[in-house]
Image (cartoon, rainbow, N blue to C red):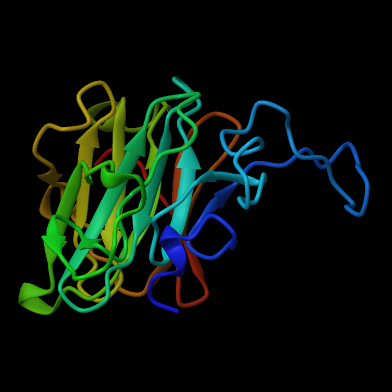
Length: 207
């Protein structure tokens, strides 16, 4: 249902945190005792964050442990969500909000974490694909910046990992790269950045 993302009794619209190296009664995994809703009556203890519509790729910044999420909107706004390391229990607002736009739903708890960036469907944009904070060496200009894209237009933007609320910077033309239908980003052990689209994998390098 549209309001499921505000309902802690269901796993819909959530980010989960589980221990796959342990088990507990009735489960093939263990729920960490310090998860935010373990002691909340009626809530699923696996939930780490909630209030998401369709989180299309999330990542953890290897430099800071912060959580970054690309959350696909319904028909008006695409958003990037952020919480610092260890900040369990965040409510990102869907379906009471779509990006920063009110959406008619009921917000659990009375408050939520607003997106650090959003963009509309103007100009052919359609769906955000979340990425990574770049921690590699091949593209010095991207150091410490979160990279994400739109599935339909192939536009690329970055956000400062040290100042997540600062305005995004479009880097489409700077990189000379516009890859539509990007389904996912990836990073290797050295922190170098990749994206995949239509059966191909691209690696980010300096021009």
